[in-house]
Image 1 (cartoon, one colour):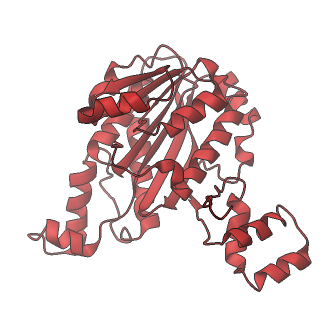
Image 2 (spheres, rainbow, N blue to C red):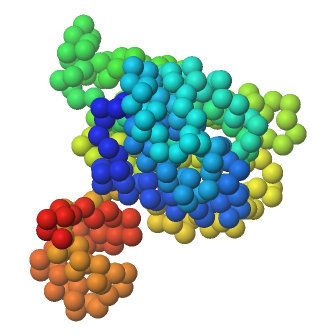
Image 3 (tube, one colour):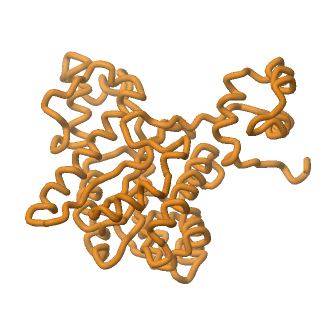
Length: 329
């Protein structure tokens, strides 16, 4: 859970881009599922960036922020930017079961700044059993695979690298949602390890829904909306889902045309948010040829800017924040 000493996420470029992508996704989602009567639950920290976003763009007034840093309660209360934010102090594991999320639809963002530990999966299970049909759940977490040297230090008694990795996965993520036939080879690569963590989340949601759906005429179903991988100093991932029950809700999801977003993902293949290292002058020049500029001008710029950077810029330029020094402006 976020603490007051963590960096301001609004100035972390990839995180900033991700947030804007989620904003646009939710705005389009709200065409079929009006969000003004939704409840938003998140980890506000002292910046409350996502709270300001959902209040401004989705017109949500029922806002709940969970903060585990109880010792700095006065700081969070002082920095709370909206009177409608209800502060809940304590760990998410204890607070989430107390929130009545089965009363109306909700958007919940479990924005963990640490590893996807076993208690995080417990939070997801709790929400999967309580969230109303039409609700949305996002989960963010550190998805960096452990390094061999770290495993050797933590599990010196285990003789093989595969054995150490197996012990690490069970220790950090628990054993409840790990398949018995898990293939451990290749998990030293970030893309493979993040895929494993996504699978654990899907497994725990689906198992909880299986229990929830017993005896229900209309079964609650799960639909993935996003699957992000990005780096802001460390490897991070975000997955997002919505829950639906009726054929009418399924049709509304289809009509919302969320699939038209480049970053929409309903499978295990992640959308990689990559931010090319460009100067302000290079950014300005590239903006002038977006989205489909003169081929001649693009050829000129490719002599200065690598084509791969231009391609990546074309995918994120709508969401790219521009930070400037006021003395240079």
